[in-house]
Amino acid sequence: MTAQMDEKIIPIYQEVLARNPGEVEFHQAVREVLESLGPVLTKHPEFAHYKIIERICEPERQIIFRVPWVDHQGKVQINRGFRVEFNSALGPYKGGLRFHPSVYLGIIKFLGFEQIFKNSLTGLPIGGGKGGSDFDPKGKTDGEVMRFCQSFMTELYRHIGEHTDVPAGDIGVGGREIGFMFGQYKRITNRWEAGVLTGKGLNWGGSLVRTEATGYGAAYFVDEMLKVRGESFDGKTCVVSGSGNVAIYTIEKIHQLGGKVVACSDSSGYIYDEKGIDLELVQQLKEIERRRIEAYVDYRKHAKYITKGNIWEVPCQVAMPSATQNEINGKDAALLVKNGCIAVGEGANMPTTPEGVKIFLDAKIAYGPGKAANAGGVATSALEMQQNAVRDSWDFEETEARLHKIMKNVHRDCFEMAEKYGAPGNYVIGANIAGFIKVARAMLAMGVV
Ligand code: GLU
Image (cartoon, rainbow, N blue to C red; front, top):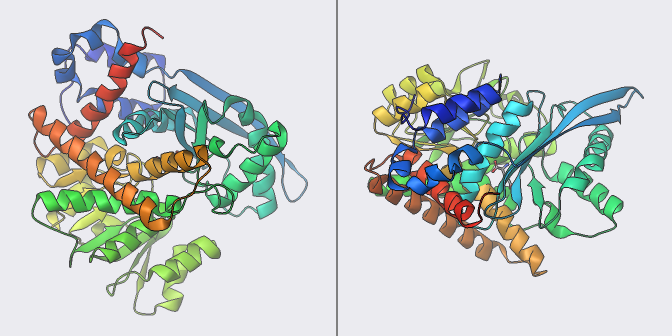
């Protein structure tokens, strides 16, 4: 556990457990935020009086639906679709869609809950939501993915809109899927409504830098944490787990900032390349050929592929988990610290277990939790919405400069809030409190709704 929970908050948490049985990832995400909020209630009794925490823990709306589709053999398949519209105090619900076989309500609720505070931290007018399906895109043909996306949108379209709820990508949902879903939305509604989805293609309403944004933003966040400690990426050995969109652009930015990434992974194992990961090769394999990372060693003979290996055993100074939830446990965290890791920046959502977080905080290394460190993706989605609203598009440099500034501000707000609440250097407390207070104030202003 990261901290003791305040006694005023324990009954609230117990109620969350009782009302949401079996949703362990959701419990974990709620617990981690609630553990930070005791001192906030002491300072702001009005938040307790108006039951702001209780209300934040209950989604405004949860939609679960059937997604039937026909596979390439002509067989009928049935998946389950979700959209959890968690909180709209700061703006329309905003958050990605995840297509992965592990998806169930507890995963979507943990992601939606995290998204509320992350989106608040960006300083942009976006509420929190998340959706997805237990559909597994792995090994599916383009035609199957298209038919699935069309069926998914045939239900989802009635719940979303540029002023209501704006989905985007997450694990298993990238440019291809957003294209298929946008096409179906446009066909059903007869509206070319750019602002309904983000992560669109560049010639039909998308924003430059959105593809790179989560990874670039995470590297910028770590850069800021290092600066505070009089350090930089320059010459540092880094490990980035995953090899999807977040990992790829994290690696690219680390290399631009002078660090060297020596390992990345997928769910089957990891590659170790002491000369530094060849990013173009990873992009070719993952983004174009949609192959496993194992193929890397066919092209780079000096590199090693470790089947089923644990990437956190690779010694590094900076670790950036960018694969999925709970990928770093207590043992992994202890190993990282023992091997000399001084900074961890989370590109994925909730990639460290509570035991792991405690180890990082006790060791006093720079630990940037996902809701702060990976906020650059959704922030750039909000920039895409801004451009759509004024029917404009900005160039790469301008958009990246805005992303960079947003990440510096997110870092500063978390850093200062941690100091203010007597926990200097603790970005968990800083991010949770800074994210929460903005939403709480807006909810208070809007009455009991
Ligand atoms: N799925 C991303 C996240 O976890 C991005 C969401 C968005 O762009 O709306 O924040």
